[in-house]
Image (cartoon, rainbow, N blue to C red; front, side, top):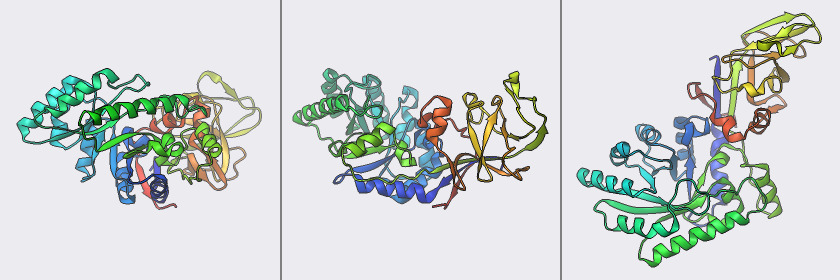
Length: 380
C-alpha cells in the first residue's frame, strides 16, 4: 500500500469499555459512526464497536445505514441527519430509525410503512437552543400526537443537541438547554406519551454530566480516543470526574516516493515559497490535499520518518508534498512515514494536525479521504 489508515482494534475496544464504565445506570452507548466513522472507516469501526459492546449505531444518512445493514448489523441504527422524502422507503425497508422534525416526513413515513405492513420507530429532535435541526417547543405536542394517531409509526425516542458544551468551561448554557429538554419530555409524558429512549449527551456531556446520560449517550469523537476539547479535559479535572483513559485509534501512513539532494539556496515546490538554507535532502511523499493532507499545513507541519520529525517544505500539492529529511539518517525510498499517529518516541496527534491547519480534530480526521484503505491492526 502507498497511503493507508491503520485502526487499532484494541484501542477502540478499550474506549468503548471506558465509556460503559462511565455511563450511569442502564444508559445505552450509541456509537456515532457517521461520516465514515469520523474518517476511521464505517465498516471497520462498526464491527469493532459492536463487538466491544456498543448498543446502538448512529449514522448521518440513509446510505450509511444501508451499509451497516449490508454488513449484517442488527443493532438499532439511528439516522441523525435529514432523510429526503424520496429516500424514506429505504428507512422502512432497512429498519432504520430516523430523527424527525418535519410533519411531512411523518406523513410520508406513515404511508410507506402502512403500505409495506411494517412499523417504523421514529425519534423526535426537539429544539433547545442550538437552532439547527429540531422542533420548536410549541410544536412538539402536535408532532407527538401525529405519531400517536398514525397507523404505522412508534415514538421510540426524543433527542436534542448542545450548542456550547465543548468550547467553554462555563456550562451554564448547556445546562439551560438540558432543562428545556427535560421540560419538553416531561410535557410529553404528562400527555400520555411513552418515550423509551431519551438522549441528549454527546461525548463532552457524557464526560461532564452524569444526569445527562438518560437512556442513551451518543459517543462520537471520544470513541476514537480524542478529547472533545481541552476545555472539556480541564472541566473534568475541575469537577473531580474519574479519570477516563482515552486511547487514539487512528494512525495515517504513507511511504517515501523519492529522496533527492538539493543545493543550498534551492527552491522547493510551487510558488517558490521555501528556499533551502543549507545543502538538503528532500523526500517526496505521495499524499496531498486530495487525500486530506491539506494545503494549510504547508511549511508548518511535521511527519515522522525513522522515529524522527521531518518538516514539510514548500506547498502541499494535490497529491504530494515534500519534507526535509536532512536530519533523518538513512531515510530512503519506501520508508514508512507517519502523517498522524506515533512512531518511536514521537507523536503527531489529531490535535496537533488541527492546530497546524487552523481547524479542530473532528475535521482533521473526517477529511482523510474515504478511498484510502482502512486496515485493522491489533496494536494495543
